[in-house]
Length: 234
Ligand code: HPA
Image (spheres, rainbow, N blue to C red):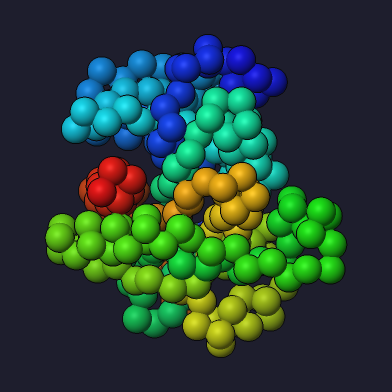
């Protein structure tokens, strides 16, 4: 039991999927895991542990934004022994060839800042995905016939961004999509010798303002969860 996670020692698997939304954690656990058991409800940030194809896995909500994710990932790694951490979430598309429902496998995560910036001081650290997870996720997406883009994403500190010029620079530099968590996840995984990857579904598009209707979200989010699970246990 930690400050933010009520699970007993041993209740959380070495492999953890991290959706931002706790209700998506519940949906993914009930949809994809065998014998899912709720292991956390502190602050409503639901977490579950079950098995997938015989492999033990937890699905824990991370909340929105890097400060929230940082709390959960620090405790999962330091207190519960998590070793492989996969963010599953939505992002905004930033390139014309990236469509709604497409999956993005985040090779790198650029940012203006992360909660780790204070300890990194003047360093512009380059947060990147674990190669074995990235390659396995690319194979899993291909095997499922899912359009997956592999490349850089932007982890923003704001959803309602008053600095459109920052997005413009990201678009100009080939960044595929924007979300709010991966850069800190990758930085923490690097610091603690863990494996991490963000598997993202494009839920809205910054270039044309389109968004996925909620009825259509579930199917494409399901592809993302299965790609993450296949990559984790490849
Ligand atoms: N901005 C930031 N985070 C997001 C977005 C976005 O447009 N869409 C989904 N997550």
